[in-house]
Image (cartoon, rainbow, N blue to C red; front, side, top):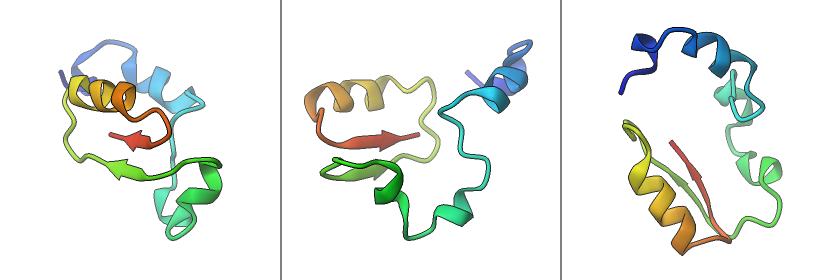
Amino acid sequence: MRVKHVPGSEEKVAVSEHTVSDPEALRGHWAELLPGCRMLFVEIGCGKGRFLIEMAQREPESAFIG
């Protein structure tokens, strides 16, 4: 599912506390944003996020970004 095809989705993403609008500013500092995180995983093109959700349930001490 592409967010751009869901009515109102761009507005919801823009105001979400989970949206990082300037990821380049966090370059090298992601761990500071996620204290207590053992490992950080990033998946590009995560689709609906089913895989990331399953992995997050298996690895609760890790952070997953999609």
